Amino acid sequence: MPKQMVEIKFDEKRLRGIQKMLRSIPNGMPKVMTWAINRTATSAKAGIVKSIAGEVNVKQKSIRTRITKEKATYSSWQARLGISTKRISLISFKGTSQTKKGVGYRIDAGGARKLVPSAFIGTPRRTGFAGVLKRMSKHRYPLAWLRGPSLGHIFEEAPSVVKEVTESTSEKLVKNIDTRIKYLLEKHRAK
Image (cartoon, rainbow, N blue to C red; front, side, top):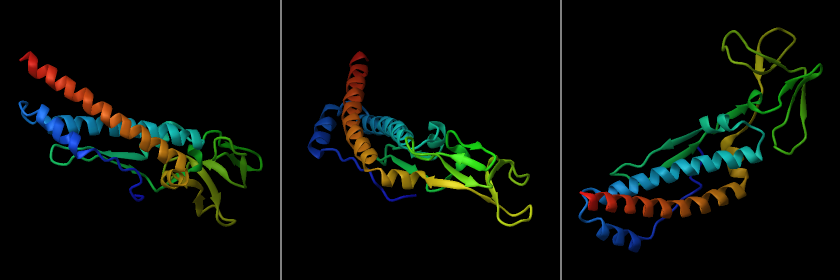
């Protein structure tokens, strides 16, 4: 897991005001905060996926599966998004194709295509997964799996993505807290 890169803090004075508003509701404050934080983490994950997909030529589904989410609870008001540091297989990049000379691929969304001479797309019996492979000697085995950069590396190297996610996440957290407070107060008044 890469180091923590995005941290959102909330005003303590505002938290005390929210706590006063929700005094009459049992577990009001934890309900509001956990819901808002988890909702914000979900939208932050979606934002990261979209931003990275714009930078790199990878399907959003492949990116989404490499980002883990740890939810906030009543006792711990923090959510964590973990970005995988495992390198992405070349087969996961859009437009990876077999040619007579080898395998062509493109990592950057607007970048040039590159060629790996004498590589091929195959499915080794041992793993059962398709990938871009290259022989390490003249013999049939061993085979080397060819990979691109990791999502963690891409995220660290794109400061615009980090800045964009931080700004949108802090705005969404405030909005989600206000939405949940309104919902709980209306629900409590209806009783």
